[in-house]
Length: 359
Image 1 (cartoon, rainbow, N blue to C red):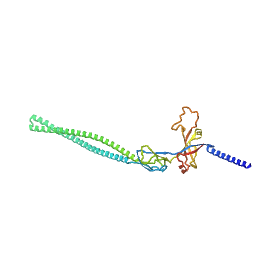
Image 2 (tube, one colour; image 1 turned 120 degrees about the vertical axis):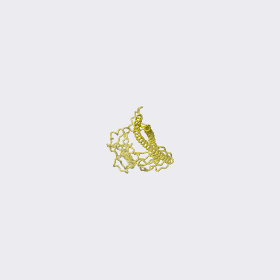
Image 3 (tube, one colour; image 1 turned 180 degrees about the vertical axis):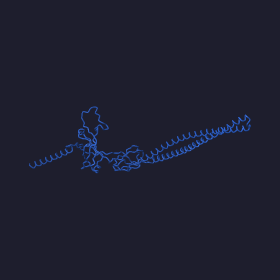
Image 4 (cartoon, one colour; image 1 turned 45 degrees about the vertical axis):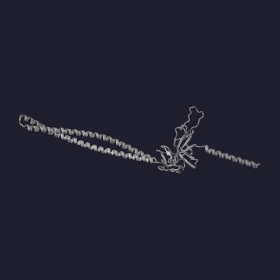
């Protein structure tokens, strides 16, 4: 009988010990005493950079594996580029044609400019000839008038008078011819100047066409460069969404790269805990996936709205909600420099963590 009581007592002690151990575990997990605010509604975040296509094409090569670490600038995907090389060659030929056309128009403009100079020189020579012919005509006119007066007095012969008259008429004809040459030179210069203006306009249009051809060439080169898709940052690639031979469209997502240069935690605290949480407050947190490591950080920002408000489909309470639901507010936590680099690298994006904000 005593032995049975001893067994029963031992059994009760074991049950009590197990209950105490269970209670201690529950308290350690869910009861957090001291000047700190605890939550297990927290997640690790890293920048996730999408890699998209900029041009249409068929996938020629895929040079990465899922979850592979890549460096910024590493080639990830190569698209078929035959079409874009042909477009580049066409743009280069178009630019060469435009430049040759500009050269021809420019040469014609130089020729017209020389013709303008020649016409201007002709006007100067014609003007000098007019002055000379005018002096000669005036002298011949005076001689003619003098011989006419002398003939009336019988002081000269008819032959002398006729010679003076002939000289005057010849000099007047030369003066009129010089005026005609000046008018012709002026008309030629005007026509040449007009042609020069038209040629300058054509040259301007040719230069504009050349600029358009250069822009098209640069665009063709740019599109050709887009057929080689590179990693935008250092990090680990995610799941690939493409296959060799697949036709991809501009803007299509190929893969995501998880940037390793930055990491932070978003902890969702209950609204009743916010009065103890301030910017700059010290934080410690741990992660089940990384046992034995405690991370240190600080609060850098507290959201100005609750998580429910920032949802894609916010809760509409217009009809009335008689059950008060305690809201949670996102708090951004960044790691401090005293964490080990190898421990920080273990924090994968999306891991759940347990955080404690000290106050």
